[in-house]
Length: 68
Image 1: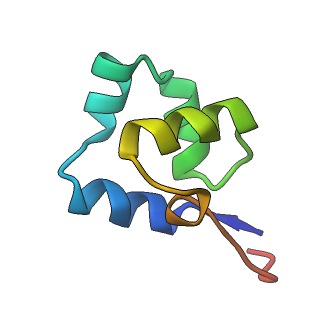
Image 2: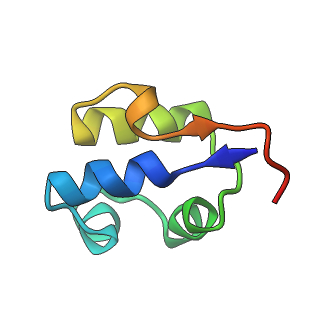
């Protein structure tokens, strides 16, 4: 299972909102929807998020064995 809980914590620490991702960084609202619902995203999107947030992948995604 994919969890984007680390992403929300990283964004909170950096005071970056989903609105900022959409309006200033051109992340699509569909991608935000996928993130909020722990659905898959492309590696390209992961790379963009890491660049925007100046972080590594582990600050964005967590892989678990849970099947929620």
